[in-house]
Amino acid sequence: MPIRPENLHRYPRDWNEISARIRFERAGGRCECTGHCGLTHPGGRCPAVHERIHPDTGSVVGLTTAHLNHTPEDVRDENLLAACQMCHLRIDHGHHRVTRSITLAARAAAAGQLGFLADADLERTEPPAPPRPSAPRTARPALQLSFTDQEAP
Image 1: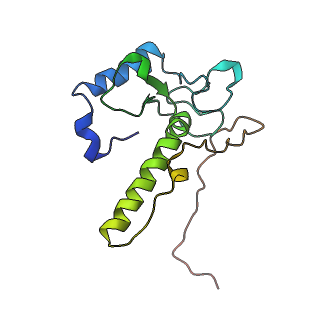
Image 2: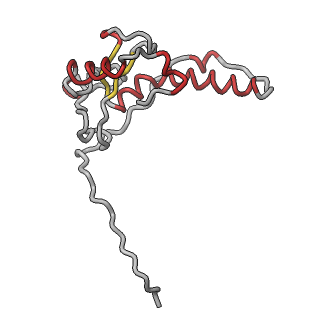
Image 3: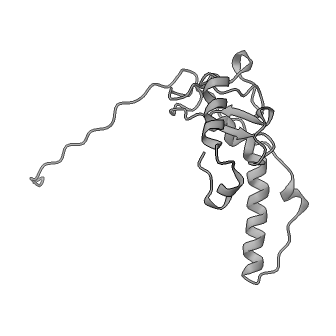
């Protein structure tokens, strides 16, 4: 997942090396999620492998490094998890919901609007479980259209 420019200063200078070590040396290029995302994975661990088709989403996996406590400055190995995009987004779902509420409230206040931030907006909730396809998806060939310079009669 890309680092937002306003948060870049929070990551150590050697973040790329730390992230690569977690994703490829420690995790062997496979998602390390064992339920951190709220899903029960077959065999106990997410089967997603870097640069292969994800068995649940059908998209190509780009392995990421998740901060379990959502603190970029904390790069202890026990706080970092190699995660596919689906698991990473699910792990961060509650954090994203809270920060979005705070951002929207700050924008409203800056615009001179009075508002409130309910406590319920600051509670972590789990996203719904994605549907599991009955059979693994395979890459579909690209649709090819042919155009001619002639108009139809």
